[in-house]
Image 1: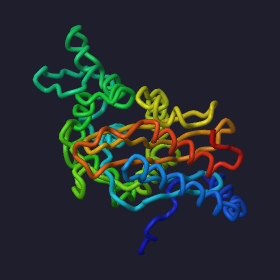
Image 2: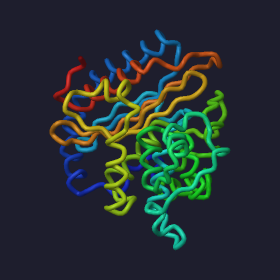
Image 3: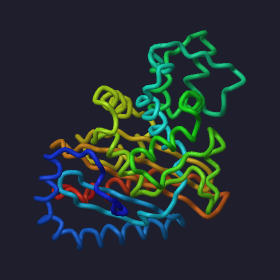
Length: 306
C-alpha cells in the first residue's frame, strides 16, 4: 500500500491525535504568524549570509512552521542521537549487557574533541557502555560517538535503523570527524528538517523504542550540555529540552530536539544552518537560539518573542 510522502509521525498517542484534530481551529489563525516568522528567518539568512532549514511542530495542536523543510543539510553531530537510539534498540544476543560492560578504547583511536574518552584514558578509568552513550549525547564526545558506531555496524547500521522507522531521507555515511566536512551538494551525512524532526518525534514521543529505552534516551538528552547558547537560550523559561546539537565546516550550526512547554505540551524543532563558503565561520549560536524563539512563538499560542 502506498504511503503518503510525509505521514504524521507514527506511534503518537490517541490523546495527541485527538488534540491535533481539536487544534485545526487554531491552525486557521496561523497564516499571519507564519508569514511574520518567515520574514524573520529570511532576514536572518540575509544578515548572516547563510541558508537556514527549519521545521517546528506543536505535537498537540498540529501547528507547524517550516522553511526549506525538504532541503538536505549536513546533520553533523546530530547523528549521535540516532546512533545511540540504534544501540538501545539492538536486541541481538551479543549486545545484551553492553551498557553495563566496560569499554576499552585504544589511545590511537581517539579523534579530535574526545574530552570524556581522553579523561578516562588519562585517569585509567574504564567507562561502561552507558557512560560512553551519555558522553556521546551530553558532551558530543567524538571518540564516544565513534565507539557507538563501532558496535552498531557503523554508519550503515544507524541508517538501516532510521529506515525501519520510516525515514527515507536521513543518512549516515562516515565516522567522526570526516562526517563534518559539510561540502555543499554532498548528500553524505545529511537530512532534511522535516525528516529528522519526524524521526526524533518517533524516538522520544512515539514508541519506536521500548519504554525503558525511550526513557533512558530522553533522560540523557535532557541533560545535554552543548545547547546552552542555542535552543536553550531561545526557549521560554520553564521549558524542558531533550536535544542534540551539531556543527561542522561551511558554517554549519544545528540543533534538533523535543521541547516541553511549562504546560507539558511537546514541540519538536529542527534547525539547520549552512554557508556556501568553505572559510565561513561557524554560524553564530544566537541565530539558532533565535530560530527556537521564533518557532516557540509561532506554534504555541501563548508565547511571545522576547
